[in-house]
Image 1: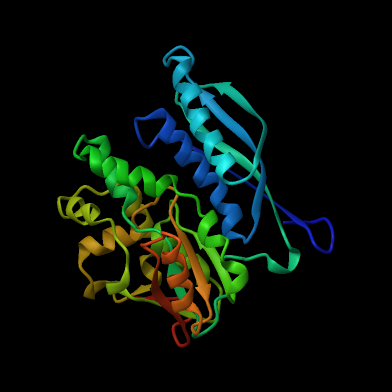
Image 2: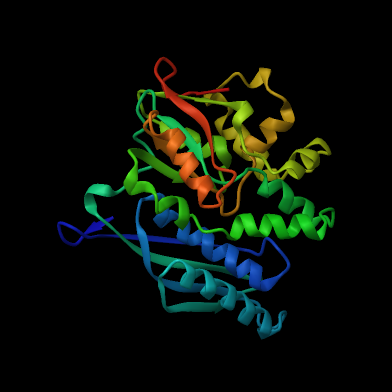
Length: 295
């Protein structure tokens, strides 16, 4: 964050990755939504974006890139930001994303830490996109499921973030490659609080449970588990399939919002009234388990 005036600070973020779906336009939407998400997680509003492109010119038709850029531009416009340029290189593997500049009031910047004992934790998108994407790559997912998971990943976190000013938000982050537990751990690292997760309140993509039961789990989930399992209490008491989803690396996942316990229910109701039907209270910040996730 760079403070410019008493009322304006700038946020800068960048993110890009390889295609997660076959449809170029959808990939562009997902990559753009993912890159824009960090600005929303900090309580800001995107104002400009720049394309970042690595494209295998000799292997792919230029029409593929055109469709990806069209999908990205549509999401930039939906965010109310302006595309101001970008940079491209030739590469053996296609990659796309954005560098995003946002603005925020200096006194309203949200960090990924700061939850207080008694605060509730709200998640705004369902879990399981990494598992479903793995199934898609194996040609195991039907068209209906592919469409559903694209809509989830391409959905902007703009809409829950628009409600922040009306509530007492103490911390926020978005759920991406480290999975739900990985990003939840970041919220309590080096803090005097722990975090109890409500296993029965988690919003899951139903098909992700079915695929996980079949053993279709990305390698990233196993890496996430190995890295963070020492911070997690109660793993032995939970279904291994559910654990796989809690560690599942997400693409363009939802926001994790630490909010005053007296306002959490109203916040979720507000989000659901706006069509964010999977929003749910999934945990509570607690004393006595410093730096630990309790399942």
